[in-house]
Length: 68
Image (cartoon, rainbow, N blue to C red; front, side, top):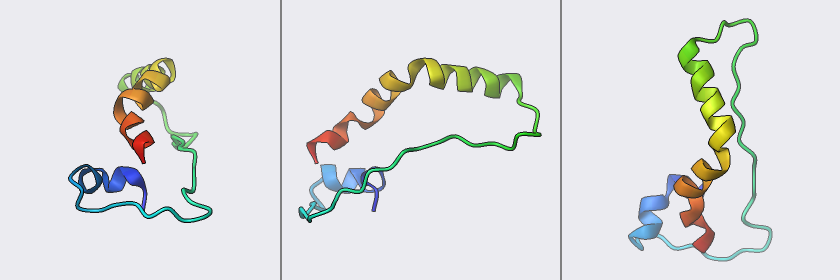
C-alpha cells in the first residue's frame, strides 16, 4: 500500500509500518496524456507550473513520509 494512501492512519497511529527486507519499493510518477489531443491553455499552464515547482510541491505535499 503506498504511504500516501494511508497517510491519515499513520499520523493517527491507527497503523504502523513493520520494517521488512526489500521494502519500501520506490517508484516514479509520470503525467501522461494522448499525443493527438490538443492541450487547453489551462492544462498547459498547469503543466508549466508543475515543471517549474516540482521540487517545492513534492516537499510541501510529501515530506511527511520521510519519517517512515
